[in-house]
Image (cartoon, rainbow, N blue to C red; front, side, top):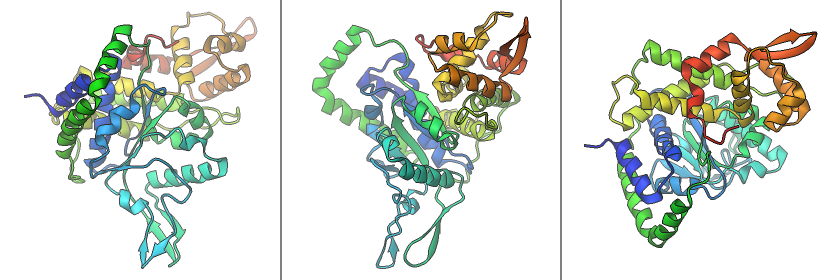
Length: 388
Protein backbone atom coordinates (compact mmCIF):
# COMPACT_ATOMS: atom_id res chain seq x y z
CA UNK A 1 0.00 0.00 0.00
CA UNK A 2 1.51 3.38 -0.97
CA UNK A 3 2.41 5.85 1.77
CA UNK A 4 0.71 9.23 2.08
CA UNK A 5 3.76 10.87 0.55
CA UNK A 6 3.69 8.52 -2.44
CA UNK A 7 -0.03 9.14 -2.92
CA UNK A 8 0.48 12.90 -2.78
CA UNK A 9 3.33 12.79 -5.28
CA UNK A 10 1.28 10.67 -7.69
CA UNK A 11 -1.73 13.00 -7.36
CA UNK A 12 0.31 16.14 -8.04
CA UNK A 13 2.10 14.51 -10.96
CA UNK A 14 -1.16 13.37 -12.54
CA UNK A 15 -2.77 16.79 -12.08
CA UNK A 16 0.10 19.17 -12.87
CA UNK A 17 2.68 17.09 -14.77
CA UNK A 18 5.50 18.62 -12.76
CA UNK A 19 9.11 18.44 -13.99
CA UNK A 20 11.10 15.91 -11.96
CA UNK A 21 13.20 18.69 -10.40
CA UNK A 22 10.01 20.25 -8.98
CA UNK A 23 8.50 17.08 -7.51
CA UNK A 24 10.44 17.73 -4.29
CA UNK A 25 8.11 20.69 -3.71
CA UNK A 26 5.34 18.20 -2.86
CA UNK A 27 7.52 16.74 -0.10
CA UNK A 28 8.44 20.23 1.09
CA UNK A 29 4.90 21.65 1.27
CA UNK A 30 3.42 18.67 3.09
CA UNK A 31 6.41 18.29 5.44
CA UNK A 32 6.18 21.98 6.43
CA UNK A 33 2.58 21.46 7.55
CA UNK A 34 3.19 18.15 9.32
CA UNK A 35 6.34 19.42 11.09
CA UNK A 36 4.26 22.23 12.58
CA UNK A 37 1.74 19.82 14.03
CA UNK A 38 4.01 17.27 15.67
CA UNK A 39 6.49 17.47 18.49
CA UNK A 40 7.64 19.97 21.07
CA UNK A 41 9.54 22.29 18.78
CA UNK A 42 11.31 25.53 19.56
CA UNK A 43 12.28 26.29 15.97
CA UNK A 44 9.42 25.68 13.56
CA UNK A 45 10.35 25.60 9.87
CA UNK A 46 8.92 28.83 8.49
CA UNK A 47 9.34 28.64 4.73
CA UNK A 48 9.39 30.29 1.33
CA UNK A 49 8.36 28.45 -1.83
CA UNK A 50 10.36 30.42 -4.40
CA UNK A 51 9.68 30.55 -8.12
CA UNK A 52 9.05 32.96 -10.98
CA UNK A 53 5.59 34.18 -11.92
CA UNK A 54 3.46 31.55 -13.63
CA UNK A 55 5.62 28.59 -12.58
CA UNK A 56 2.88 26.82 -10.59
CA UNK A 57 3.42 27.96 -6.98
CA UNK A 58 -0.20 29.01 -6.45
CA UNK A 59 -1.54 25.87 -8.10
CA UNK A 60 0.57 23.73 -5.78
CA UNK A 61 -0.81 25.29 -2.59
CA UNK A 62 -4.43 25.58 -3.81
CA UNK A 63 -5.45 22.14 -2.39
CA UNK A 64 -4.56 23.34 1.12
CA UNK A 65 -6.87 26.34 1.29
CA UNK A 66 -9.96 24.65 2.77
CA UNK A 67 -8.18 22.78 5.56
CA UNK A 68 -9.20 23.97 9.06
CA UNK A 69 -5.58 24.22 10.26
CA UNK A 70 -4.56 26.45 7.35
CA UNK A 71 -5.07 30.23 7.56
CA UNK A 72 -4.70 32.06 4.23
CA UNK A 73 -3.56 35.67 4.27
CA UNK A 74 -3.36 37.81 1.13
CA UNK A 75 -2.04 41.02 2.66
CA UNK A 76 -0.40 42.38 5.79
CA UNK A 77 -0.49 45.69 7.63
CA UNK A 78 1.34 46.79 10.75
CA UNK A 79 -1.84 45.95 12.70
CA UNK A 80 -2.64 42.55 11.20
CA UNK A 81 -1.18 40.40 13.97
CA UNK A 82 -2.06 42.71 16.87
CA UNK A 83 -4.99 44.91 15.87
CA UNK A 84 -5.56 46.82 19.09
CA UNK A 85 -9.29 46.69 18.33
CA UNK A 86 -11.60 45.43 21.10
CA UNK A 87 -15.36 45.04 20.69
CA UNK A 88 -17.69 43.75 23.41
CA UNK A 89 -14.64 42.76 25.42
CA UNK A 90 -13.27 40.60 22.59
CA UNK A 91 -9.89 41.27 21.04
CA UNK A 92 -9.92 40.97 17.24
CA UNK A 93 -6.19 40.40 16.78
CA UNK A 94 -5.18 37.66 14.35
CA UNK A 95 -2.27 36.26 16.35
CA UNK A 96 -4.29 34.24 18.93
CA UNK A 97 -6.22 32.58 16.07
CA UNK A 98 -3.03 31.26 14.46
CA UNK A 99 -1.91 28.98 17.27
CA UNK A 100 -1.33 25.41 16.01
CA UNK A 101 -2.02 26.44 12.42
CA UNK A 102 0.01 27.14 9.28
CA UNK A 103 -0.18 30.68 7.94
CA UNK A 104 -0.30 30.54 4.14
CA UNK A 105 0.68 33.47 1.91
CA UNK A 106 -0.28 32.70 -1.73
CA UNK A 107 1.62 35.81 -2.84
CA UNK A 108 4.18 37.23 -0.43
CA UNK A 109 5.91 39.25 -3.17
CA UNK A 110 3.32 42.05 -2.97
CA UNK A 111 3.92 42.33 0.78
CA UNK A 112 7.62 42.94 0.15
CA UNK A 113 6.72 46.15 -1.71
CA UNK A 114 4.99 47.80 1.28
CA UNK A 115 6.38 51.16 2.46
CA UNK A 116 9.64 50.82 4.39
CA UNK A 117 8.48 51.91 7.90
CA UNK A 118 5.40 49.64 7.79
CA UNK A 119 7.43 46.73 6.44
CA UNK A 120 10.06 47.21 9.11
CA UNK A 121 7.43 47.03 11.86
CA UNK A 122 5.81 43.93 10.33
CA UNK A 123 9.14 42.15 10.02
CA UNK A 124 10.01 43.07 13.59
CA UNK A 125 6.69 41.67 14.81
CA UNK A 126 7.20 38.44 12.86
CA UNK A 127 10.70 38.05 14.25
CA UNK A 128 9.41 38.38 17.81
CA UNK A 129 6.50 36.03 17.13
CA UNK A 130 8.83 33.36 15.73
CA UNK A 131 11.15 33.58 18.72
CA UNK A 132 8.21 32.93 21.04
CA UNK A 133 8.79 36.11 22.97
CA UNK A 134 5.18 37.21 22.56
CA UNK A 135 4.06 40.66 21.43
CA UNK A 136 2.60 43.23 23.77
CA UNK A 137 0.45 46.13 22.58
CA UNK A 138 -2.09 48.42 24.22
CA UNK A 139 -5.49 47.06 23.15
CA UNK A 140 -7.89 49.56 24.70
CA UNK A 141 -8.35 47.55 27.88
CA UNK A 142 -4.70 47.58 28.85
CA UNK A 143 -1.52 45.79 27.79
CA UNK A 144 -1.98 42.36 26.25
CA UNK A 145 0.58 39.68 25.54
CA UNK A 146 0.08 37.07 22.83
CA UNK A 147 2.25 34.04 22.32
CA UNK A 148 1.25 31.78 19.43
CA UNK A 149 3.20 29.01 17.72
CA UNK A 150 2.39 28.50 14.07
CA UNK A 151 4.03 27.58 10.79
CA UNK A 152 4.42 29.78 7.71
CA UNK A 153 4.41 28.84 4.04
CA UNK A 154 4.84 31.83 1.73
CA UNK A 155 4.88 31.75 -2.08
CA UNK A 156 7.32 34.32 -3.41
CA UNK A 157 9.35 35.23 -6.49
CA UNK A 158 13.18 35.19 -6.55
CA UNK A 159 13.08 38.87 -5.54
CA UNK A 160 13.06 37.50 -2.01
CA UNK A 161 16.87 37.22 -2.22
CA UNK A 162 17.14 41.01 -2.50
CA UNK A 163 14.40 41.57 0.05
CA UNK A 164 16.17 39.48 2.69
CA UNK A 165 19.39 41.41 2.17
CA UNK A 166 17.42 44.35 3.65
CA UNK A 167 15.77 42.27 6.41
CA UNK A 168 18.38 39.61 7.17
CA UNK A 169 17.18 38.81 10.68
CA UNK A 170 13.84 37.56 9.33
CA UNK A 171 15.63 35.59 6.63
CA UNK A 172 17.44 33.64 9.33
CA UNK A 173 14.07 32.20 10.40
CA UNK A 174 12.99 30.98 6.95
CA UNK A 175 14.06 28.00 4.91
CA UNK A 176 13.52 27.97 1.15
CA UNK A 177 12.75 25.66 -1.71
CA UNK A 178 13.10 26.91 -5.27
CA UNK A 179 11.07 25.51 -8.16
CA UNK A 180 11.48 26.02 -11.90
CA UNK A 181 15.25 26.30 -11.27
CA UNK A 182 16.47 24.60 -14.42
CA UNK A 183 15.92 24.87 -18.14
CA UNK A 184 12.38 25.62 -19.39
CA UNK A 185 10.15 22.59 -19.92
CA UNK A 186 10.24 20.80 -23.26
CA UNK A 187 7.75 22.14 -25.82
CA UNK A 188 5.73 18.92 -25.66
CA UNK A 189 5.24 19.39 -21.91
CA UNK A 190 3.63 22.77 -22.50
CA UNK A 191 1.42 21.26 -25.22
CA UNK A 192 0.27 18.55 -22.81
CA UNK A 193 -0.51 21.15 -20.15
CA UNK A 194 -2.51 23.18 -22.65
CA UNK A 195 -4.59 20.12 -23.52
CA UNK A 196 -5.25 19.41 -19.86
CA UNK A 197 -6.36 23.00 -19.22
CA UNK A 198 -9.80 22.04 -20.56
CA UNK A 199 -10.20 19.68 -17.58
CA UNK A 200 -8.74 22.04 -15.00
CA UNK A 201 -11.83 22.10 -12.78
CA UNK A 202 -11.90 18.29 -12.72
CA UNK A 203 -8.24 17.68 -11.84
CA UNK A 204 -8.21 20.54 -9.35
CA UNK A 205 -11.12 18.95 -7.50
CA UNK A 206 -9.52 15.51 -7.62
CA UNK A 207 -6.15 16.80 -6.35
CA UNK A 208 -7.84 18.82 -3.61
CA UNK A 209 -9.76 15.77 -2.42
CA UNK A 210 -6.67 13.56 -2.21
CA UNK A 211 -4.47 16.14 -0.44
CA UNK A 212 -7.22 17.03 2.04
CA UNK A 213 -7.72 13.35 2.83
CA UNK A 214 -3.98 12.89 3.41
CA UNK A 215 -3.46 15.95 5.60
CA UNK A 216 -6.61 15.31 7.63
CA UNK A 217 -4.69 12.34 9.07
CA UNK A 218 -2.47 14.91 10.81
CA UNK A 219 -5.25 17.35 11.77
CA UNK A 220 -4.91 16.85 15.51
CA UNK A 221 -1.68 18.44 16.77
CA UNK A 222 0.45 16.17 18.92
CA UNK A 223 2.75 18.27 21.09
CA UNK A 224 3.88 15.20 23.03
CA UNK A 225 5.30 13.55 19.93
CA UNK A 226 9.08 13.36 19.89
CA UNK A 227 11.06 12.75 16.73
CA UNK A 228 13.52 9.88 16.90
CA UNK A 229 17.11 10.56 17.94
CA UNK A 230 19.29 11.12 14.87
CA UNK A 231 22.17 8.72 14.27
CA UNK A 232 25.74 10.01 14.35
CA UNK A 233 25.82 9.95 10.55
CA UNK A 234 22.57 11.90 10.26
CA UNK A 235 23.46 14.48 12.89
CA UNK A 236 26.91 15.04 11.38
CA UNK A 237 25.31 15.52 7.97
CA UNK A 238 22.83 18.07 9.36
CA UNK A 239 25.56 19.97 11.20
CA UNK A 240 27.78 20.19 8.10
CA UNK A 241 24.89 21.40 5.93
CA UNK A 242 23.81 23.90 8.58
CA UNK A 243 27.28 25.42 8.83
CA UNK A 244 27.37 25.94 5.07
CA UNK A 245 23.90 27.48 4.97
CA UNK A 246 24.06 29.78 7.97
CA UNK A 247 27.57 31.08 7.30
CA UNK A 248 26.72 31.41 3.61
CA UNK A 249 23.53 33.39 4.14
CA UNK A 250 25.18 35.79 6.57
CA UNK A 251 25.62 38.67 4.13
CA UNK A 252 27.27 42.05 4.72
CA UNK A 253 24.97 44.91 5.69
CA UNK A 254 25.64 48.22 4.01
CA UNK A 255 28.89 46.59 2.83
CA UNK A 256 29.99 46.08 6.44
CA UNK A 257 30.98 42.66 7.81
CA UNK A 258 28.57 41.19 10.37
CA UNK A 259 28.86 38.38 12.89
CA UNK A 260 27.80 35.18 11.13
CA UNK A 261 24.57 33.44 12.11
CA UNK A 262 25.05 30.32 14.19
CA UNK A 263 23.79 26.97 12.85
CA UNK A 264 21.58 25.92 15.79
CA UNK A 265 18.22 27.19 14.49
CA UNK A 266 18.64 25.83 10.97
CA UNK A 267 19.85 22.46 12.32
CA UNK A 268 16.60 21.97 14.23
CA UNK A 269 14.45 23.19 11.34
CA UNK A 270 16.11 20.85 8.86
CA UNK A 271 16.03 17.81 11.15
CA UNK A 272 12.34 18.40 11.97
CA UNK A 273 11.51 18.79 8.29
CA UNK A 274 13.19 15.55 7.24
CA UNK A 275 11.54 13.65 10.09
CA UNK A 276 8.15 15.07 9.06
CA UNK A 277 8.80 13.87 5.51
CA UNK A 278 9.54 10.40 6.89
CA UNK A 279 6.30 10.45 8.88
CA UNK A 280 4.41 11.17 5.64
CA UNK A 281 6.28 8.25 4.05
CA UNK A 282 5.36 5.85 6.91
CA UNK A 283 8.99 5.48 8.02
CA UNK A 284 8.90 7.24 11.38
CA UNK A 285 11.30 4.95 13.25
CA UNK A 286 13.65 4.17 10.37
CA UNK A 287 17.05 5.70 9.66
CA UNK A 288 17.29 8.19 6.81
CA UNK A 289 17.44 6.73 3.32
CA UNK A 290 19.09 8.30 0.29
CA UNK A 291 15.89 10.19 -0.60
CA UNK A 292 15.94 11.84 2.85
CA UNK A 293 19.57 12.89 2.45
CA UNK A 294 18.83 14.25 -1.02
CA UNK A 295 15.84 16.20 0.33
CA UNK A 296 18.00 17.74 3.07
CA UNK A 297 20.65 18.70 0.47
CA UNK A 298 18.08 20.33 -1.77
CA UNK A 299 16.45 22.40 0.99
CA UNK A 300 19.88 23.50 2.22
CA UNK A 301 21.16 24.50 -1.23
CA UNK A 302 17.95 26.38 -2.05
CA UNK A 303 18.02 28.21 1.28
CA UNK A 304 21.36 29.77 0.39
CA UNK A 305 21.06 33.19 -1.28
CA UNK A 306 21.73 32.90 -5.01
CA UNK A 307 24.96 34.93 -4.85
CA UNK A 308 26.30 32.87 -1.93
CA UNK A 309 25.60 29.57 -3.64
CA UNK A 310 27.40 30.69 -6.80
CA UNK A 311 30.36 32.08 -4.89
CA UNK A 312 30.81 28.93 -2.82
CA UNK A 313 30.68 26.77 -5.91
CA UNK A 314 33.12 29.03 -7.75
CA UNK A 315 35.76 28.76 -5.04
CA UNK A 316 35.11 25.02 -4.60
CA UNK A 317 35.93 24.48 -8.28
CA UNK A 318 38.81 26.95 -8.36
CA UNK A 319 42.12 25.36 -9.28
CA UNK A 320 44.85 25.54 -6.63
CA UNK A 321 47.13 28.55 -7.04
CA UNK A 322 44.87 30.45 -9.43
CA UNK A 323 44.60 34.12 -8.54
CA UNK A 324 41.17 35.76 -8.46
CA UNK A 325 40.69 39.52 -8.64
CA UNK A 326 37.56 41.25 -7.38
CA UNK A 327 36.76 42.42 -10.91
CA UNK A 328 37.10 38.87 -12.27
CA UNK A 329 34.81 37.54 -9.57
CA UNK A 330 32.32 40.36 -10.16
CA UNK A 331 32.22 39.57 -13.88
CA UNK A 332 31.88 35.83 -13.28
CA UNK A 333 29.07 36.13 -10.76
CA UNK A 334 27.35 39.16 -12.29
CA UNK A 335 27.51 41.43 -9.26
CA UNK A 336 28.77 44.90 -8.37
CA UNK A 337 32.57 44.95 -7.66
CA UNK A 338 32.13 46.92 -4.43
CA UNK A 339 29.59 44.41 -3.18
CA UNK A 340 31.81 41.51 -4.19
CA UNK A 341 34.68 43.02 -2.19
CA UNK A 342 32.44 43.24 0.89
CA UNK A 343 31.20 39.69 0.31
CA UNK A 344 34.79 38.43 0.16
CA UNK A 345 35.47 40.12 3.50
CA UNK A 346 32.28 38.61 4.95
CA UNK A 347 33.08 35.09 3.75
CA UNK A 348 36.60 35.45 5.14
CA UNK A 349 35.28 36.63 8.52
CA UNK A 350 32.80 33.72 8.57
CA UNK A 351 35.58 31.22 7.87
CA UNK A 352 34.27 30.10 4.48
CA UNK A 353 37.35 31.53 2.73
CA UNK A 354 40.90 32.16 3.85
CA UNK A 355 43.10 34.97 2.53
CA UNK A 356 46.37 34.13 0.78
CA UNK A 357 49.01 36.16 -1.02
CA UNK A 358 50.94 35.57 -4.21
CA UNK A 359 53.67 37.90 -5.42
CA UNK A 360 52.54 40.46 -2.91
CA UNK A 361 48.96 40.38 -4.25
CA UNK A 362 45.98 39.48 -2.08
CA UNK A 363 44.08 36.32 -2.98
CA UNK A 364 41.49 33.94 -1.50
CA UNK A 365 40.82 30.23 -1.40
CA UNK A 366 38.22 28.00 0.20
CA UNK A 367 38.95 27.09 3.80
CA UNK A 368 39.69 23.39 4.51
CA UNK A 369 36.63 23.16 6.80
CA UNK A 370 34.31 24.53 4.12
CA UNK A 371 35.72 22.22 1.46
CA UNK A 372 35.31 19.27 3.82
CA UNK A 373 31.68 20.23 4.56
CA UNK A 374 30.89 20.47 0.84
CA UNK A 375 32.51 17.13 0.05
CA UNK A 376 30.97 15.36 3.05
CA UNK A 377 27.44 16.56 2.26
CA UNK A 378 27.76 16.56 -1.56
CA UNK A 379 25.48 19.61 -1.49
CA UNK A 380 26.13 20.64 -5.10
CA UNK A 381 24.87 17.32 -6.44
CA UNK A 382 21.31 18.68 -6.28
CA UNK A 383 22.03 21.90 -8.17
CA UNK A 384 19.96 22.79 -11.26
CA UNK A 385 21.68 22.41 -14.61
CA UNK A 386 21.55 26.13 -15.31
CA UNK A 387 23.20 27.17 -12.03
CA UNK A 388 26.27 29.20 -12.92
